[in-house]
Length: 356
Image (cartoon, rainbow, N blue to C red):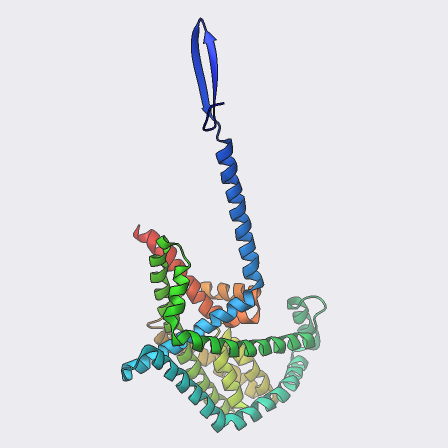
């Protein structure tokens, strides 16, 4: 055995010596194998840790979304008046909060009354729908989509519990978003410094593009949400559907969820319209179909003119994946998550390979 992990064999043939040597990379191979095993274990542990902290990570992402909204409004304020970035974002938050508080003071009593009326009206409306569609058919559909042993009452209770958790999480996300929006560069630079030196510039450029795409997408969604709220409120009022204001608020909020949101927003309105009469329910269905055609072919393209365009199939499947993985929070944040994932893959993987 020679130093350096080499072995040498000396053979003698007719008085001549022949040396046969070979490398013994046993030590090196063992070290590399051990390193790979440790890396694999570390990756598995990180994946398990991320899965256990999924609710916290979703709250952090929601806070980032709130910060992006405040940054967008802050940029708009800076165009009107030359103020520092932090001050503009703080003023944007104060302005948004003032508008929401003012709306609550002006219409809070009416909204509260309609929401209470909506809560009292939806159960009888569902019963009327079950009687009209047939209890056996509705029960079969629920059995097909619900897990074994799950009743409709437990499903509703679970949904309301999830909504309560989502509202409490929204409060935390808003507070976190305000803190991030006051000085976002500190958090951005800190996150970039956690990466290896060779990847910092590339990830920094990709994160800036992703942030701009997310900001444009959120502004486009806010425009669609506002348009949906106004049109649905006017349409349901003209059709004589009870609780038109509360139903319009629900439809506007559901508009934040791409593709699935318009359908979810229309269901309560159709159920409530059914308590008035079958004609009103049919007119309500027709109204939502017409509005969705207008919104999908006119309002949305205009709102998304400067925003990132994602194929509808990609959006739909991403929403389903996030909904299955993270439940209701994943479904509510599925749109922004899809935008971030799409832009990250595009800027970090697709564009460098296409240019290379």
